[in-house]
Length: 147
Image 1 (cartoon, rainbow, N blue to C red):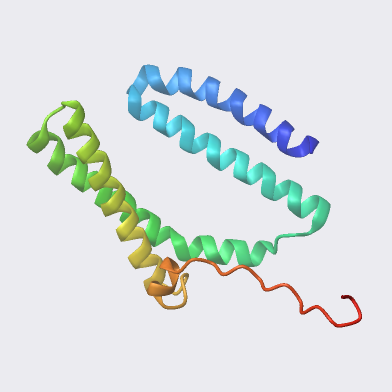
Image 2: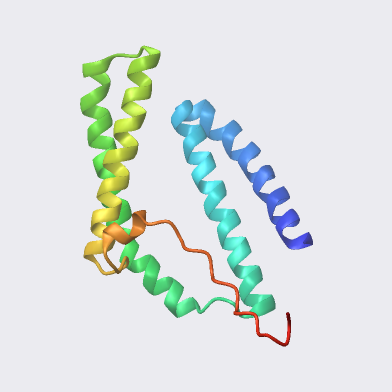
């Protein structure tokens, strides 16, 4: 229980420092960069703790998966950036326009990521199965002796 709390404290400290520095230089974009960097730091610290204490992660498998996902991540970033460059002048800066831009960016970036992650073989299975609800495990049958 102490490890996640320690990581959360480190992450909060990093975020506050990075947010102060990055927001002065890049405004709201700096806040997003600070949050992303903090998420990377906290994820890395938690993974390191898992490996050290429980040998729960296989580093080779993790690095292999990250290598597979880098093109999908870059494509999602590029698609989101292109959509923002195109949508910002077209829609303006009103609140409904900002919400619409956010929705489009999530769909475009997430769609590009999902398509390329599946293309490189990271996601397996039928995409329609992603939409099916998880079925709860059935309890074991009760024998007559237990009744």
